[in-house]
Amino acid sequence: MTNTLEEYIPETIYIVEYPIHYGGMDLFSRMTLVRLSDGKLWVHSPCKVDSQLKAEIDQIGEVAYILAPGNFHHLHVADFQNAYPHAETFLCPGLEKKRADLEFDWILGNKPDYRWHEEFEQVVIQGTRIITEVAFVHKPTRTLILVDLLENIGDDYTHEAGAILKFWWKAVFHMWNNPKAAPEYQIAWGDKDIVRKELEKILLWDFERIILAHGSLIDTDAKAVAAKGWGNVLDYR
Image (cartoon, rainbow, N blue to C red; front, side, top):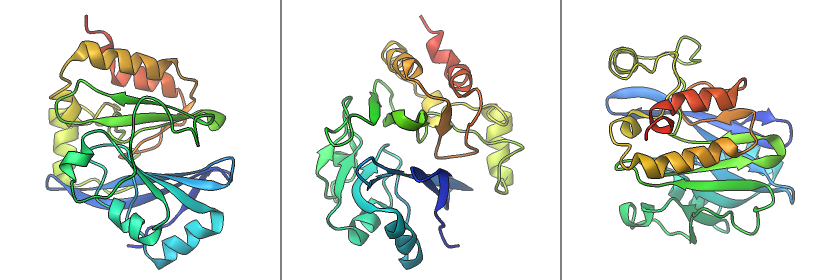
């Protein structure tokens, strides 16, 4: 299967869906590219890049920043680095230990890099036991960009969902047609007091849509969907 670039927000945000195999399940993940105000490209959760995809990307701008935004979203960073050796690489905290083989320039934190601070807000989701990720909002388009903090798989899923995926999402985690954080979050939220403050910060951001790594994009009632999906943490006291 060839990964194909799709325009999501005209001339600003592009996405690529690509297949992955995880935990015995076949599903899809999503890469997001944002064309910054200076024309350079900000690449979030990179996928494999072949000559066709590279040609499509090169048509819209220069890849300047490669981000591994979560400790489960790093597999194709090196592939993108090989394709774009002059781009700078940013890792989610902890990945520098998990992937000691990866070369990188910066560790992501709670403040955006000075090159994109006027266009983004970001926060590190800390206090969890299995997953760490950095959430972003692209302010000009009011778009929240996540990897595993919300997953949205159900009847409108645009890809065939296998029996194993349906079993876990329906019978075990009750996530079918019900957007929630990834199962690894749910079984190991960790210190909910810490996590709640970070989720509350996200909900204060101005966004109207959500790009996520797994499942259908959320284009309506985005803030309400996120608040409901994180309810067991937000309501924890």
